[in-house]
Amino acid sequence: MLASENFPAHHFKESIFKPYSTGADDLASATAAVATTSLSPDTASVDFETARKMLTTNGCSSNNNNNNNNTTDMQSQDGLSGFVASHPAAQFEGFIRACVDEIIKLAVFQGTNRSSKVVEWHEPAELRQLFDFQLREKGESQDKLRELLRETVRFSVKTGHPYFINQLYSGVDPYALVGQWLTDALNPSVYTYEVAPLFTLMEEQVLAEMRRIVGFPNSGQGDGIFCPGGSIANGYAISCARYKYAPESKKNGLFNAKPLIIFTSEDAHYSVEKLAMFMGFGSEHVRKIATNEVGKMRLSDLEDQVKLCLDNNWQPLMVSATSGTTVLGAFDDLVGISELCKKYNMWMHVDAAWGGGALMSKKYRHLLNGIERADSVTWNPHKLLAASQQCSTFLTRHQQVLGQCHSTNATYLFQKDKFYDTSYDTGDKHIQCGRRADVFKFWFMWKAKGSQGLEAHVEKVFRMAEFFTAKVRERPGFELVLENPECTNISFWYVPPSLRQMERNRDFYDRLHKVAPKVKEAMIKKGSMMITYQPLRQLPNFFRLVLQNSCLEESDMVYFLNEIESLGQNL
Image (cartoon, rainbow, N blue to C red; front, side, top):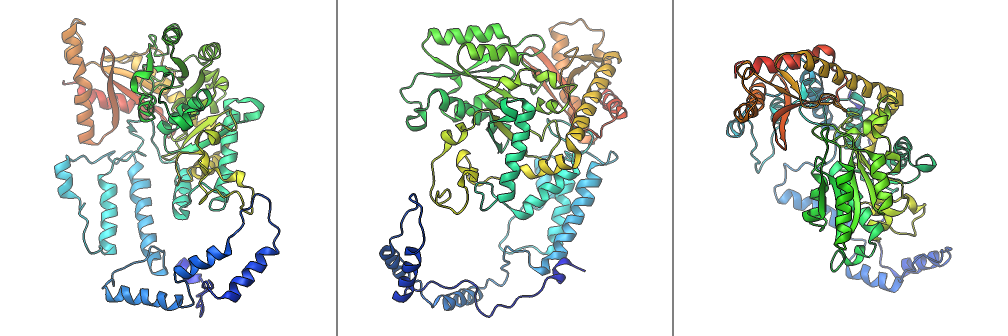
């Protein structure tokens, strides 16, 4: 039996919503009712004469029911017989269930099976011929829509596949998936308590626990927000730092102000520079600090750059440290950076979007020693903890700075005379208006696994990374970029037999530079796996294995090496 068949049918003879009336008696009654109500001093009084004129001008009368009927007639006359309301009426339940069944079968299970392809590759021109992208005047049939759904799964990259190790996200966590489906069904926007009461309190709970795990004082005192990606979270850090050290910038901007300088690693995520450009700092005001041989920020260069700014009468604003760099997985020296931030009165931000998940593990959280000293932290559960995209947080030890920095007090959303505690209306402290309830999928996943389950997940992927690293060391033709990687991204070269006897000169490195792209092309067209590659400064292209899917086993690590060797041995 369909769920919709169990619902009682309601046939209202009259609308439960009474139309406005402009009669004098009605307004007089309303006036008397309000006059007898106890108003708090900060409640704005209502000008009923103005209200009377507005209602009369807008023509709101008891003829509204007729107007509603006319709307229906107009739809018929305009030939809108194909119009379908955006509402899950009972006749759509079978279609919804069929689509969900297709998604579960094709995307969730078949798409994540090791025997299936990671991707069915087609060039853009060919894909345009294979898939119906065209939008038309008339809607498609449900059968056609189900066909399009199947084809969408077919031609998409299966990022939940165990052999998708291409980016800093992968896997399909069943609890996070269910959580994301539910929030899509409820379609909330988390900006006021009245429209998202449960998710507002849930965010408060999850962010408080994350701050406690970071180690902020007083059991995680501070504030935070779920953001649409780690890039925006890093932008929040820049914005909050600017407000703290240059509060007048909220009103006056950066015009005629002393230059504010941001410091970050040369291996930091590009979002620090991009958001600085976006926010009007300019890329020249982002100073890239040199890294050492394992990818950590050089503190000596950082201090030299800070002194240079002071010599030029510029204001050192903040340091954006990185815990888990995108390529090498390096963790900056947070204790040393915090000392310099204290010495030169700078905001300390830690971009732990990638490596923050290690905080859940007692064995690996030492990688982030000193993070508790930060003013703010970016931490993305959709990365190392494998929650569904997107799930990103900005955390700060400062309780009021988000609200002070970003509030505009829009009275159409954040009225202060609401009937509940408006401190739970969190929307004015973030830069968006509408905002997804990304908290739920992570909360649901955390509830299902517990902190111990998340710890076990983190330790499993680190264990696989260590196993893979050991295999690379002992296997002919494979060479590590870093002998002892800190995180679960392992960078390495594959040297084909044709190059192994060559002298390590410019010609050798030019040839090696071409190997990874060719192997990547072959694996994509075969659909056997996806792993990324990149150069780094003077280093030729190398592979970067990224692990955060805890379903992977030692046999999978061997498969990755075998496949790369098979595809590249004749180059």
